[in-house]
Image (tube, rainbow, N blue to C red; front, side):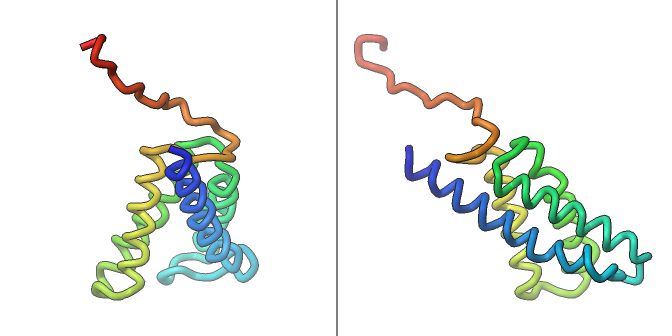
Length: 128
């Protein structure tokens, strides 16, 4: 069980750092995404950095994953799918799947939000 909790930690931190890495430039350069006004790129950057940090710290689980799923899902629908299935589509699709996995399984160890799931106790033969 400790191995699973550790791997959830690794997955959570890795995905959070990816979002921080990709969101920070949007905060510093006011990019125009898909011809949209620059404030849209800035807003996406805020979401990616803020919720990426929350993901790394394991804060407000599972709610912190939802805005990130929306951002990356929107990118999939409006950018990646129309552009054809390429490596960037596959990457974004895998990130969505990993976020959903984290949302369902919890943040793992060393998270500010503790998982409310309790480990199932094996049923003894006497109880059957």
